Length: 106
Image (cartoon, rainbow, N blue to C red; front, side):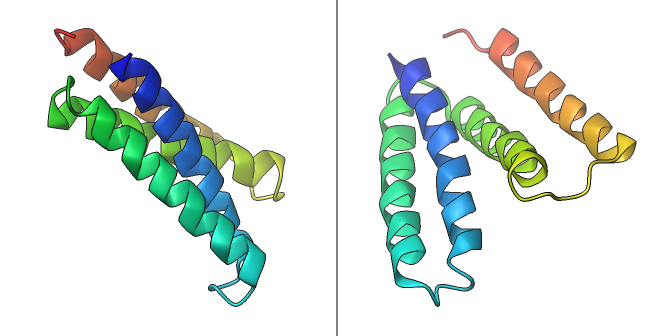
């Protein structure tokens, strides 16, 4: 169950990052509220996952999902630049996540 909490927490990190961008520096009320709600949900699930998973594993996976997810949403939804270098960087992050999962005894 800890891994499910962690994956959902990482996905919610992508959601709150998207709404933070949409809030335009917290000047728009509804995206600002959504940012805070999804942020608390993400942190809450991360903390639940940390009851069973090591800190380094949980935090690395959470930030990795958030980083790669934000990159994908930025390119697919917000029209941000897609380059070979950025794709290689994302692949390296995912590779690190896989290695972190494989090295975890949980």
